[in-house]
Length: 202
Image: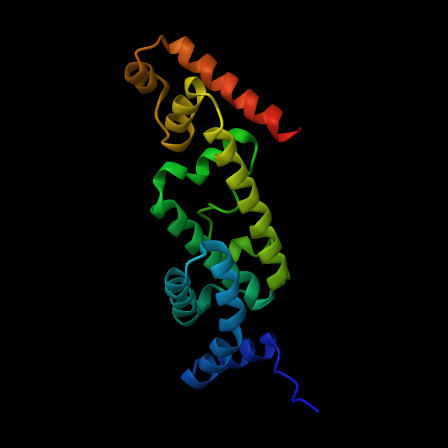
């Protein structure tokens, strides 16, 4: 009969109580496989996934005081990992700023929140690893869908929408760049967003 694994909670309690390298390693080794799989599902890059795993588990050692033992250790750690992944995505291609998704009604506030990891636990009590994976898949599907919709627009709308929503250009800067009246710029942005919204509900 296989030996029963020690629970996350017990491993976490042991580590917090002792702060020893031995107990840290036990928790680290138990968390790493699932965490690594989750991160790779987000970034789709082995080398980057390894770096983010290392950064995340380093914070388990250096910032464990921010963790509230009332909740699952995975709730706290997977939030850190996801924020690390989002930071990498934005750095990889700043033309695809995740902030732009808010213009399409996709809420990104909880992903990009500046509040502490401890405060975020209030919203995400007892999330499992699968919950994080499902949530990420849903979010990234929305993200890719919006980018694809923008790319399929006619150039009349596509170029202006990319500059406004993905490059965060101001309306007046767009008017200067495209040598169009400010109201025309606003109308094209409004129309392009309406086309994307209409296509998304077909």
